Image 1: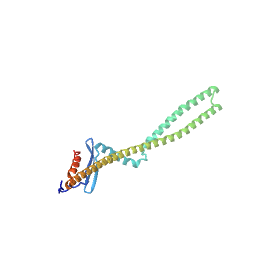
Image 2: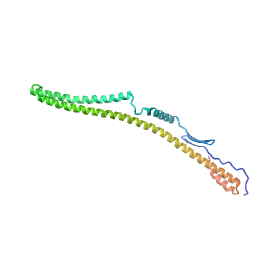
Image 3: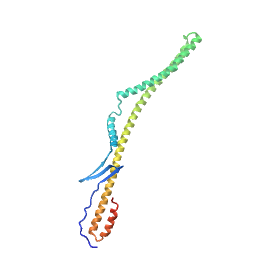
Image 4: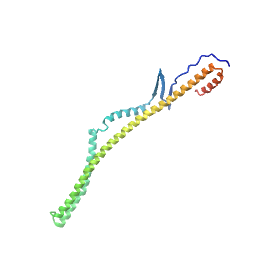
Length: 221
């Protein structure tokens, strides 16, 4: 076969790429001049989650370790409730104990003006004083626990918001990466087709190259 003289086919340097999910275009890669642009399309639900996480994170961080008056009031109320319950428990334990001891001494001696009553009373009061001292320590520990739990809840919430934002960003990057892969595959395919057409136009073995080209084109829908 003789050499042909047809004009060469221009070899494209770039092919657009895109990725769709459930019929929805999620990402695209295009070129404008010398600039390659990538884009990720969020649906309304994704935008709502992303915007909420971003807005709430920005509003929460500045006061993350600061307790406002409302929070302090709530925490102090819990400590006060804990203290009152503990005091009621102590009263329910020691008041009957003193009353029973008083009645016992009075029935045995006819009065409570004696050393036995005073010794027993001092013993009971010492035990109650120790219990009150332990209660003060428990209250301080309980208050610290409440404050630490509040901070932990806040940090966990911050981590959740970060997870939502990172998940959205990772989804965008993955979809864009897939669109870019499609773009590269399309560019490579177009260049192979153009190269074979040019080879067929300028070579004595054009029939062989055209056969290869036909093999490529059969995959085009």
